[in-house]
Image (tube, rainbow over all chains, first blue to last red; front, top):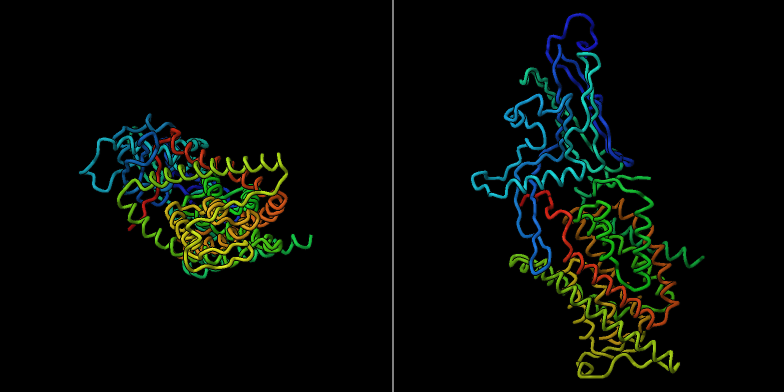
Length: 237
Length: 306
């Protein structure tokens, strides 16, 4: 921090960045959140910011017609798919990095490493299923390419905003910042970000997970009491 | 006003969800069905994940049907022994159905078989009921006479274990409602939706119960079935969202009271006619869902580690 604010000589590191918040709290009124990322470079260059959520194995299913009826016919498993992926950059990434480098750093939705559990037994329809996975996640607002521009204030200070939708998964996220010069990544930095349920919501969730039998009884009791109260209220009126 | 649902992990509009619960409650109170067939797709539509929608829907059904059952109880329209006999059959059938579901799933294409059976079943049931209720309506309008008995005596009435169901004015073998409950419990477990739409017509036409008595008795039976499902879903799958359930319940219990009032103003054949139309609409919707080309043929689900 001191390095950013200190006037005078350029920072010793080529890239310094941080998030305005390291915790996104999901409270009862949560409808999504925005987190500001800011930083400084030691000179001209382009900045790419990637925020990704915890990875999970997913399965993609394809419907097909069967006697005129649509049913799930084929499926393909993917070993690891980030639950959230957002990319922001100061210039379109295709203009500043070669495809091989985009693949290496997994920059951009086309360059995410999404593979079946055993890549040897790869099927021909992998590209279709992979595209469907990305498309479905995009529709839910969970995969975003060019979410926002990384804007420079002057030549060295930059900032951007990452938006999280209300259906974002909880867990530890990684915010990665890359400094690109002459088609090469010259510096990178990773900052963790925790998205977590806080307050009543968190307590309800823990109750449901840890004391699930009691939780079930409470849920049924609430329903029965509510039904009884409504019946009482309507009898009097 | 939005509120975050801790289990569904999305945020929803409070007023929308309460309204949704109210709508389903009205349907439940009028017809004596749970309404899960309507509630589940609506919850999916607003973005609730499928397991949470199914589990939480059953929690709302407990509240709405209990509210409706109490309202019918005050009017003397609940046949408790009948509900208990049906329930016994239902629990055995449900248990067997869960097992059978696993077997069929391993054989493949279970979804198709289930949906197809349901569409055929609902379609033929709806048409038969509509035909019957229109005919009754026309005859009553013409003659103004008393309605004919709905059931005829046949070999079924010669079965042993006869029981007197005073409220329904029936003296029939307990094996009849028991096997009816069993069959519908089996179907319910396999289909994953409440059996109200099968149970209500079956009670009217197979058991010959008075229509007014059927609705309250069916609701009482549903309270227990939906209660058991809610508990199992919460215990085994942690899929019941009490915040979502609470919002739905507020609307649902009020809707059920209103629905009961609407239902009690209708004559038997009017109620049966309306139910027939509703059954046909549900049937067409299911058929449509099966046939229509999906917007995206692909869907994504988080893989469960097994």
